[in-house]
Image (cartoon, rainbow, N blue to C red; front, side):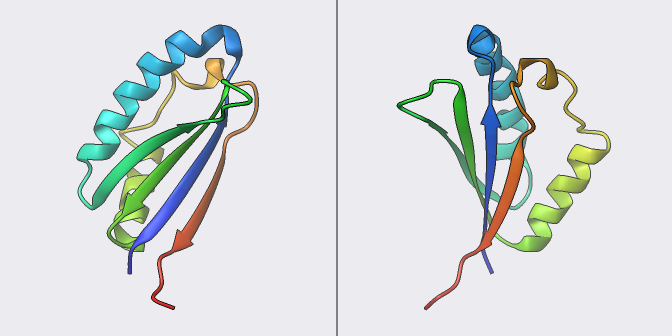
Length: 97
């Protein structure tokens, strides 16, 4: 079953240019990860420092392997200083209803 993950980021407005570079590098790895069906970045029209990474995964297992990668060898260390708040991650199962 497919899975959607929403990574909600609040960025410091003075770091947006750096954030584009850092997130671009991070998302290149994410998009290339086995089981990733794509990632789009949504930017809030009312708040340019509020971004959501809309990730599509072929399965919950593929997403879990990716999260394991990010906790280990793919750990992200350069995004933290650009953030204005703690990111949140919400996962949704895609279901035929």
